[in-house]
Amino acid sequence: MRVKQHSGFTLIEVMIVVAIMGLMIAAIAPNLFKNVDKAQKTRIGSDIRQIESALKFYRLDNYRYPSQSQGLEVLVTGPSGSSTSQWNGPYLDELPKDPWQKTYGYANPGTHGKAIEVYTLGYDGVVGGEGQDKDWGNWNINE
Image 1 (cartoon, rainbow, N blue to C red):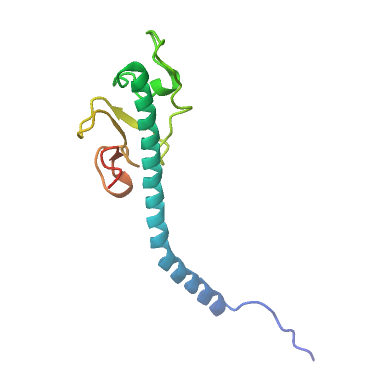
Image 2: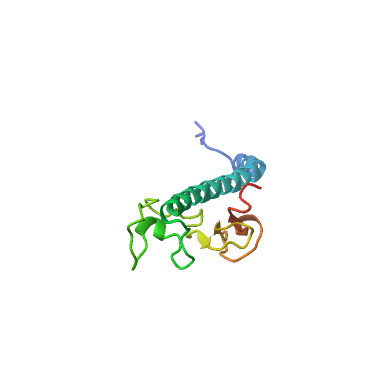
């Protein structure tokens, strides 16, 4: 009489593999999340510098930065309701979004020692915070 042999993995073998995978993920995950935060900060810095550059070109053409009420949208669409003869835009094809798909803020005059400020309020969208909730602007992006 011939005994049928079953091929496959035992429960113990599967549990060992799952445990090893869990240990590997636990060892790799912290480094991965640090890189995600670093990439977000790099993207924010790049976006802010791009917007600042467009604002400088706007200022060269119009002898002033956009007003607070005009906001950053004027870099794409131009000023409304006034003469646009000095507007040589669009200065940006579209306004970039921060890593959390929110629009960047604009302050004129600035409140952190800059003439104008371009910033994001982080994931939570509220002033202040740590980690992903930290506010990043042209006053602290190089920290």
